[in-house]
Image (tube, rainbow, N blue to C red; front, side, top):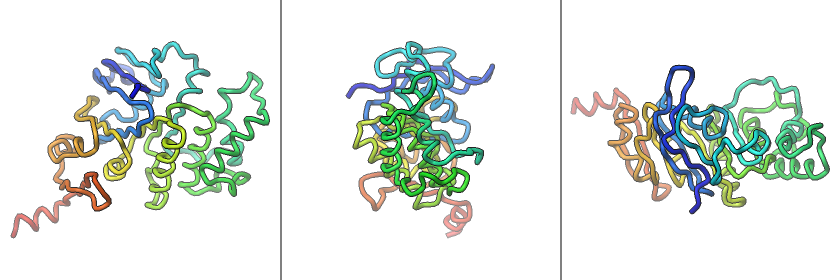
Length: 269
């Protein structure tokens, strides 16, 4: 399988603070690639570097076989869509207006929406189940609905790579599964590469083809979920007591935290 993204000895950070240290990874085209790790391990920094938002201090980054520096901002936005974490309520626009903003990289400098742009936006609304909310203002939506709006806007860009920073954070269980199912369906329907940061290890294990476990800005383990999510790897990464067994849903690992009160109960027996 051809690589969508290749990082060769990438190091970067903010000012004099290095966050990523000589990372070399390959993300196959069409894969569902999840990045996990403790707070401060460099997950979001890695996403921003892949998306071209943050420039590496050293190393080489290739997107679809070309150095990322060869892309103009407009051309890059046609290849990569970035979905940030849920943030401000301050979007004084309707759902349809926000989704249509995803066509900007394909429009002329006047930003005029063509009939084709409107049709693509409508299909993105339908795909994400937002038709009935098209004319509702963004600030009146729930958290799960807002996240789907951002994903619909990204779909409207018609990218080859979708990058998402903790898209299920702060969502209830039903919305978490809905978002993950949506990304898996999008990957299958279009062949798009999905790159996602997740704090939910079990959710990542159920959907990802490949997991990358980061620790202090460096890869600790990369591969299929069953090879990455071992007790030894997770204890090194997170420094806590946990259990790893097989999920009843199928052939993927399940990780269970062991709270201190249960550790004390076990030790006292």
